[in-house]
Amino acid sequence: MQNLLVIGIIGLFAQFIDGTLGMGYGVFSSSWLIAAGLYPAIASATVHTAEVFTTLVSGGSHLFFGNVKKEWLLPLVIPGVISGVAGAYFLTSIPGATIKPYIAGFLLILGILVLYRSISRKIPPPTTDSAKTNSSPPRPISRLKLLLLGFTAAFLDAVGGGGWGPIATPGLILSGNTEPRKVVGTVNLAEFFITIAISITFIVTLGWENFEWDLVIALLIGGIIAAPIAAYLCKRMPTKLLGILIGLVLIGLNLRTILTLLL
Image 1: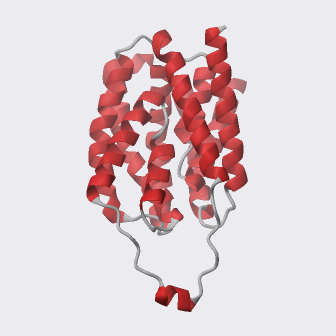
Image 2 (image 1 turned 180 degrees about the vertical axis):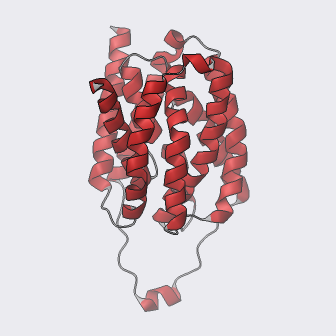
């Protein structure tokens, strides 16, 4: 019971970060589960099954608060579902002990990415009415770029147990002149459909009986509690320090996993 409580707190903290930063739930949760000894396929399956429920609440909350750019959804979701299924199948076809250090390395890189994105995060200056009048219209993101971003992010998300947010969120922010809250909300809602596809694939390939259902329930309860709060605070909370801390935690966890496997 004590261990499940810890997992629930991890799920709550992970979803709070994900809902405000647009990244972190899968990477953070998977890093802890792999560090605790789970094979990557089981860790990814556990996290994605819990995420079906947390992303539903989180995405719905962002939609309610007006944080979603609806025209981006289909170009992200359709290729994401296809590559997410392929990534989950690929992960389950490789022995867990063989791929574990590589997944830890991938998660370490994502931790560095989160840290970098948080450190380089800049607060935009206040915009006056005259500046709004003279400013150029937002530069749209091409449909091809959305398709490629959704495909890449979903595949790496399925293989690494996380990666959709750390790849999709910076990719969208860097690709167009769009409010960060719209990026975060869109990424969270699109992730709901990606996680359903990945979870079904894991259930078919791993078998229902091989899931760690107690961990799934603990993660999703913590995540569901945090999801609406995080969506509400998305456009109000200063997240730079929080992002730096989560990046450092991810780097530390996965360095420990790699060193433990190598030494």
